[in-house]
Length: 278
Length: 255
Ligand SMILES: Nc1ncnc2c1ncn2[C@@H]1O[C@H](COP(=O)(O)OP(=O)(O)OP(=O)(O)O)[C@@H](O)[C@H]1O
Ligand SMILES: Nc1ncnc2c1ncn2[C@@H]1O[C@H](COP(=O)(O)OP(=O)(O)OP(=O)(O)O)[C@@H](O)[C@H]1O
Ligand SMILES: [Mg+2]
Ligand SMILES: [Mg+2]
Image 1 (tube, rainbow over the protein chains, first blue to last red):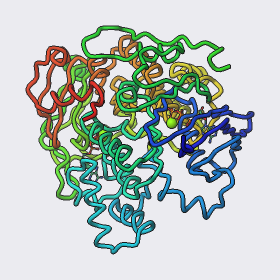
Image 2: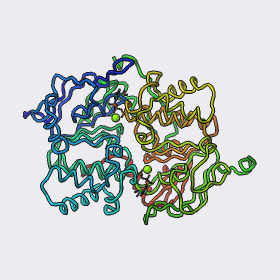
Image 3: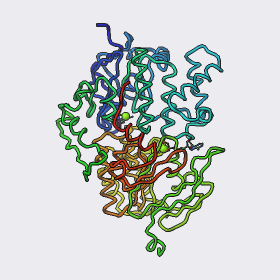
């Protein structure tokens, strides 16, 4: 067996605050090959902070420890800022959960994508422009020419999310961490975006960490799923077996989705047990 | 006040047009929502759903058309304090709507103070509890919260003023299923207790059919059809887009 693309072993992220420490991630371990790994879990369970730690985007005052955090043989805890910058965008990409907030508010969308592309590839401006427009078209932006000239606050929620996706994909990363990449998209566009990601994994051998709270989506799209609760992994299973989940949190999740044609008022809710966060 | 008694309409939008430069974002949109009704809006990304809610809330101007809320007419301009006592909005993007350098306490306190509420402390504690965030979150800054925690603060902030009309733009799309269920129950209960009116945008047809009585389907700035939610179940609708939404809501199919 070849070494995995990404190894995360006993990752911990802790925030010191005035009122004590907040342990956002408490010993998360997994490996990733050229595959689709889903991460689901409760709001606040540490999904985004896990992704951010891999990407090197943890806030400065936080403490990160791990017995191993390695991407393609590179120790991510020891890289210099310069090495980090080279990795980021080019080899590791992350679609952040707050797309519009992560875009530069005073630069048009087109300019941002072009700049990103030019920072990583030696091509002419006009070629960069063509590629950027094509990428926007691929993520189903209806009127790429118009959107090109808009500022981030002038696009809709779903359009902002797709701009962020386009910007990450255009550099062709080997590892992509997608944090709720489709949560603002209506289902039809969602499926188109997933097809693009799917192709990148199948054809270019990209590794994908797909963070989402949408169980239906994760179970139909990913190969494996990790379930997080209170900073830890409580369960890991093949997506196809999600219906046979053992952990009561995972089981409960499946039961509280509203569906068309069922009439359950109020919806069943989870009874969270203290021992789940032990 | 008499207007409200005779009019059982919470919200009435007539022939509203919103343009941005040349671009027509809302194209002759008309909607009537009865007091106490829960009205859903679905439609493809960029079809104008947020623009419609924002125009009602006075955050976008509208070029022409008429707007009446709770029996009062409003023009395209700014809204007075009384308006926000009646209407609150939960934004699609909680990152933009909550000031990152403010504590949760401050975010919840401010609207209460502006509108002259009493029992402020009790109200804040209860609001946090209702959205599943305990007292431990009260003095956190909003940039110290996860996406879903932020969204719940935005919901708490809208509910805390006990408005009559809630405009909800994808209120639960950042939440996992268990928290979503709790928030939807909370919203339903509040609606029952206080005869609230909801206008709710969501791309999750399951959520819409659970929460709403009628649903409008938008496309390219227009409302293409309005149907009772039962039509989703019986598949009695005419817009092609509604059909696509239904198929797509069943999950990803490879190949
Ligand atoms: N800057 C910070 N300071 C203190 N605590 C923080 C900070 N950022 C995040 N946290 C806390 O860390 C925990 C994990 O946050 P994270 O964003 O990883 O959650 P998540 O699983 O992505 O949740 P969601 O589904 O709601 O986005 C949360 O309880 C959050 O409040
Ligand atoms: N300030 C603005 N300047 C220019 N165009 C704008 C502005 N605000 C909105 N638009 C445009 O209006 C259209 C409708 O946007 P809106 O946010 O209402 O869509 P939406 O239906 O809410 O989509 P989503 O589901 O993606 O949130 C989009 O094409 C958007 O680019
Ligand atoms: Mg998150
Ligand atoms: Mg919107």
